[in-house]
Amino acid sequence: VQLQASGGGLVQPGGSLRLSCAASGFTVDYYAIAWFRQAPGKEREGVSCISSSDDGSTYISAPFKGRFTISRDYDKHAVYLQMNNLEPDDTAVYYCVTDRSPGSSCPMAYFALWGQGTQVTVSS
Image (cartoon, rainbow, N blue to C red):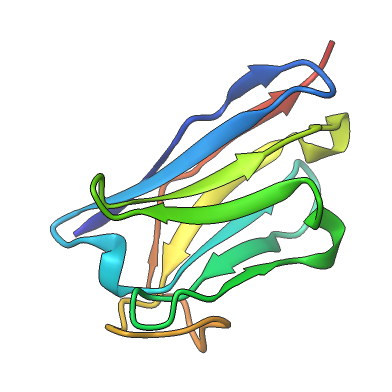
């Protein structure tokens, strides 16, 4: 079983990216999924979380409110992190993670499975 984060890339300041998190070996629909990021030389920080389909509640960490949103696509069995008005400080590797606890809600009590990360670079 694996999580796969994708959608990163190089974007200019003020631009947008949509990151995707999907799974192999299971479907993300039934699990809480969170996004974290880690910039060079900095600690990993939480960005956002979406509860399982049983609940559906979403959380955006305060520094990202108004710019980032999290959502699910049940047809594509994916979780998205829409990032708008990106800034150079948003440059980081972005990871998705789940607790693999069916029906779980945010915040997760533990992190069982991490994706491999996708690089986001914001630069002119």
